[in-house]
Length: 256
Ligand code: ZN
Ligand code: FE
Image (cartoon, rainbow, N blue to C red; front, side, top):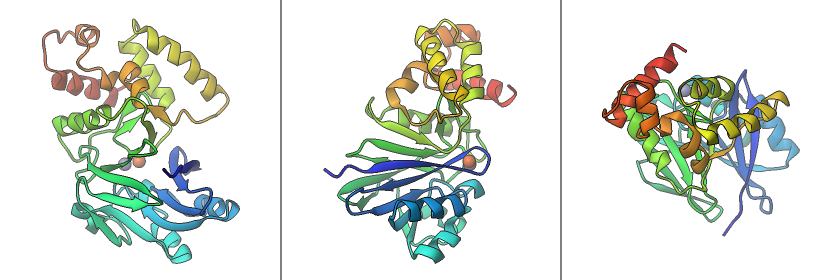
């Protein structure tokens, strides 16, 4: 199996773009180029051969570097077929569940609407990485701009259903605020209290709180815990469906 490295690149004010590369062959992929310059600098510095750009959704802070990088490196842009008219410079259009091969890795595109109607995430099956854009964040989830709450809930559950040890790479550093929200409604969660200390230590040093793992999020991300009785009790929604709990949580977070 090929072991791919992931290099996190800070872009704009709080975006994360990613360079995934084979350290031996130097072949590389970018996920969600928020802007071209910091990515170009890293590609040159690491002496990489950029082959593809993978896009999770059409928002400008995820595709902003597409055209400049494509012109510079002559790479191919990959995205969801059903949203291809909104992805600048797209070359390769994939369907839901379709697998894309890169350096012996099988990368699966997974439809995950809610934040936008054409949002998808990429699952690297062998390396156990998930690049999730703005569906899920460390201790949080994306805002619902183009979908229904049920669609968003289902999309989050798709990520929750991946193996526990999958590493989750998200599109933004929103963790400070997400942590505050989780603490507000899930204070009795001992694992959350423990994780809060670890996260605060990272944030104090201005270090990324990414990647997280599926297991970490299952235990401490309140949006992954909509089926937990302590959460529904806290929200006065005892006996309600997890979708209802999710709807309430998302509303509360929108105004937090
Ligand atoms: Zn977005
Ligand atoms: Fe974004």
